Structure formats: structure tokens, C-alpha cells
Image 1 (cartoon, rainbow, N blue to C red):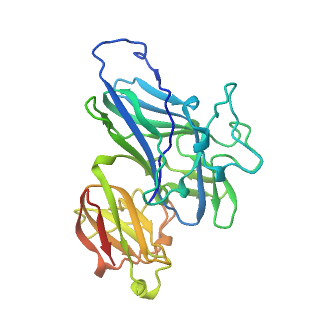
Image 2 (cartoon, rainbow, N blue to C red):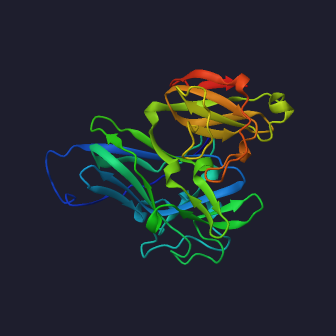
Image 3 (cartoon, one colour):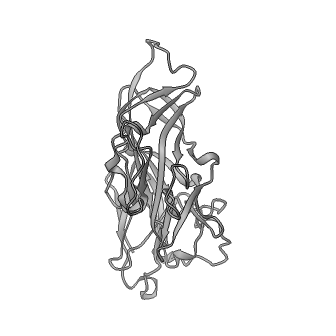
Length: 324
């Protein structure tokens, strides 16, 4: 599992119909946010650029963090073309931030929001204002939101929501008595879709918000003799239970699609799936995972090693290690 957590966002701006209120009954709380990503096949980089993060309450009030709060040195240098730099405002603050989701794996993290003041309550949405090609005078052929393929081709990265908004409609709670830590997990295998005419796009339905106190990691290893002695295309699929033994593919309309998937390291046989909610799962080894695509017609059948499925495996805060 690849993880990213962005750091240095300290300026809080409140907007909305009650943003100017000084109501003494308002409960102050703290908010922490991290980014995480599951790897995707055939891409070297997935660079996501944004210039604002917002959260929305049930009463429609919003809290937003702007670019004046971003730490310039936290942007991924590999996402910025040679001889170029991120433009800055009159005060020297970067106009946006860009990160390579593929650069952070395992337990690595880069903090986004740390103990930010936020009103306690229920929030129904988190939103990133994405930076697309041309928004800030991008260098020719290298938009800041982009992907780099295994063949070193640079292609634009768009988003399924209109107007460059990455909208995640997940509800979450902020309590005045605690400082909960949340993570936005980008499941890139489910979310990255290639459009040969317009580059790649990120399906925001493949991004989920999780509470770090209620998730853990599934890791393990796959023996070299698995998959008929060829684990070069091996993937591990994690399915929620009960599922009646039905194990679907990663398409959104699939019957019992996996909660998460990850490729197996062909050289070591190791794998890791992070930020999985605590619970009971069936964990399967798929020997031909590259045939599985989030939107293409998956006429090919997944080669699941049914004899080695770890059924009703319990994930606790101690994490879970399985061996195939």
C-alpha cells in the first residue's frame, strides 16, 4: 500500500453562512488528515496537484485551507519539470502543491493537516480543488496533474467531477474531546482509467475516507511456486464477508467487488494492503491481476487460487499477516 500524507497546512479559513459567528456554544476540535494510495499497474508516477482543501458540515458550512498554508518543500520534485518551479504569490507562497502518489509506500507518510482547529460535528464531504493543465501556465506537454507510464510517456490526469473538484462524499465525525486522524485513500487500481484521446482520469469514487483508529494493515508473502511457478502477475484481493464464495473484479458494478487489491512484488513475493477497516475478510491470490480493469469489458476470467483463500480472516489493530 502506498501512502501519502501532506504536511504543513496551518492556515484555517472558515466560509459559509455562519462562518462569522462567535457563538459561544460552538465546540472547538482538532482535525488531522493524511493521504494514502494503493499502487496501480503500468504507471511510474501519478501526480496530483491541488490548491485548496475543504470540508463541509451537515448544515452546509465549510472550512477551507488555502495555498498560503502549504509547505513548498513538501511538493514532489519529480512531478515538476526540469528548469521549472511552482509559481508563487506576492508573499512567496506557492500557488499550489503537487504530490506523486506512487512515491510513498508501506508505512511512509507525509502529513497534510495536523491538529487544525475545526468545529466539532458531522461532516459530509471533503473536497480537493485540483490543478489541471494550463491552470497556472503549465509547461508544454507536462501538466502538473499528470501520469507517467512505464514507457515514460507523460499524459494529462483529469478527474470525473466537474470543474476540477475532487469530491469525496464520505461522512466523518469530529469530536471536541479527541483529535481524530483521518486518511484519504486513493485506490488507484480501481480509480485510474485510461482515455486514449484525452489521457488518464481519476475516478473520485475510488477515494475513501477512513479513521486511522479503525484501520490496520494486511501484509504477507506469496511463495515462488504459487501461480504455477510464475508470480509476475500475482495480485492479492481483499473481499468483505459474508460473500457466499462470490469473488468479483474491480469494476464498480461487479458483484462483490474486492474492498482493496495490491500487486505482489515479483522479486520478493511480498505484499501489503494498508488502511483496511477492522473486520473479517476473505483474502485471495489472483494470478492474472493485470487483466482486471475498472471500466474495460473484463471478458477475461480472474485466475483465483481458490484452494489457498484465507477465509474469515480477522483484521485487528495488531494487523494481519497471511502466507500463500
